[in-house]
Length: 172
Image 1 (cartoon, rainbow, N blue to C red):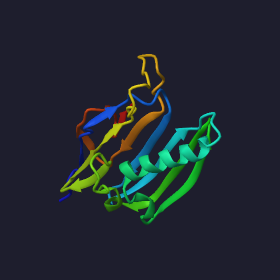
Image 2: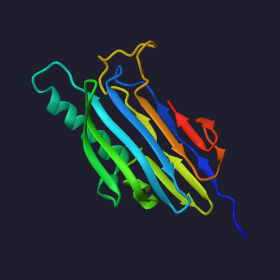
Image 3: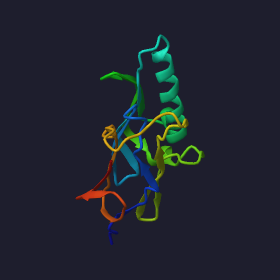
């Protein structure tokens, strides 16, 4: 007897009040029936005009990686490369048959987690790139298209707060 696999998605909050478009977070993941993950995640910050902008962008991207991805970078099947495109600097993580356990969360509040509970896969987390200062103004016209998460599952999606297309859930 075979069991039909299903996916339960609960993304607590995908807050897209991004630092006026200063953060690029793009996740495109595919979960396999044998509990591995393939795909990529880009975490990058816009490089400013100041003399130390590259160092600042690297530090900020590293802090975001640490908060959201925990120890994913050291897991089997993960390749981390420098991401330096379109004025953004950070990292691209590429996943090839990476164990699902690598996405169990780094223990920090808000980290992205992808786990299996019986026959269901559960994705949760919080992306909040709201500026810490009160001087950064965010307008409704700000470009927040640099923040996307798309996950494809090996079974039907049974609950989500994202947009579903087949077995893929997408948040923007």
